[in-house]
Amino acid sequence: MVAKGTVITAALYNSLQTQVATVLGKGNSLNTDYDPANPKFGYNQPVQSPYLVVNPTTGVFPAISAPNHWALLKTDILTCATHQNSDVSTLTSLAITAGIVITNTDIDPFTTAVATIVANRTVQPPSNQYTISTLNTSSWAQPWNAQIYNTLTVNWPTAADMRAFFNAGGSIKFSATRSNSSGSLQDTAWTTLISNLGTITFDVNGIRGSVGTGSSIGPYSLTNAYGSIPIYTYTGGVSYGGNDYSIFALCNQTSNATGTASYITFKIVFNDDSKATGTQFDSVTGTFTSTTSCLRPSGSYVNTVLPTASGILFTGG
Image 1 (cartoon, rainbow, N blue to C red):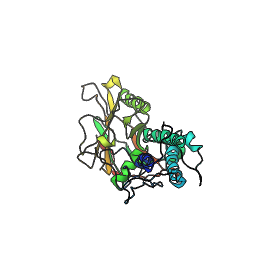
Image 2 (image 1 turned 90 degrees about the vertical axis):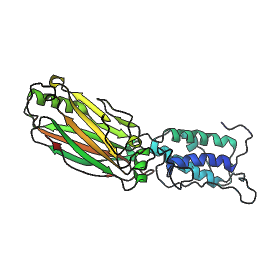
Image 3 (image 1 turned 180 degrees about the vertical axis):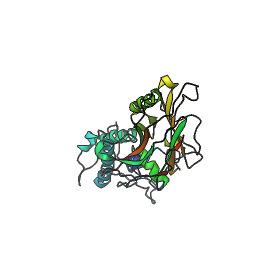
Image 4 (image 1 turned 45 degrees about the vertical axis):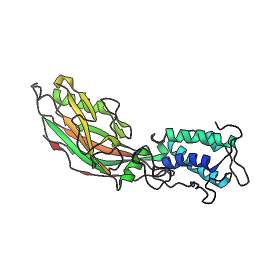
């Protein structure tokens, strides 16, 4: 809370505006470029509120009470809040019109709202602010007894587009289905595994599903090589030694810690462990279908670029 009697200066306004611009804009306070040290900031959207500069003559910020600055700042905050479904109702009800002087009492709703949108900046947006699109569906219908896998590259036009997609709450989703199996014990184990799998979500905070073991490895943790351990795995079918569904990932940078990658390649693996353990086995039959989709922030407030998908179909055997 701002102390009673505090002078409302351009510096105080700027301290709020820079935080809002960092969330809504390219990812830094002046909205000219992103901050490599903090790639999890930035929706890459237009910022309406101006950053005020020092008076070149006096060398200081002028006192500020002009309603147009605060009105534009309020608009930017509400843009972020609506996209996030964040509660900033105290600020929403604050009227800012011509002739109204902004006081220290008015600053408190701004300060609280800014803290809220910064804290919620990477949450998944509400359903009316995103679109789910299928990126790729690939199928394998031949009998197999070791491993099959589907490799898929998700591409954005630029690194800024990829950062904005994830920073605004976007995600890549994976699912699988199975049909036309022979009904053997081995096939039944795979049917059970796929039926339990559900949807796996990869976002800025990592990868997870309703079953299986995820990790905190998200887009900014990737390198240009698959790790020896998958970023997600689910093991099932214990009567056949534990079959597993796994996901590996890499990007087009030696390290994406600073957010410079523009694509991610996912390797989705179906591994049958019965042969490896020496258990009596038959070939796995039926049609395995792997589907990759994306949840894209695409509302009227924050609209990110839809990625494309390229890659190969299933391989293995």
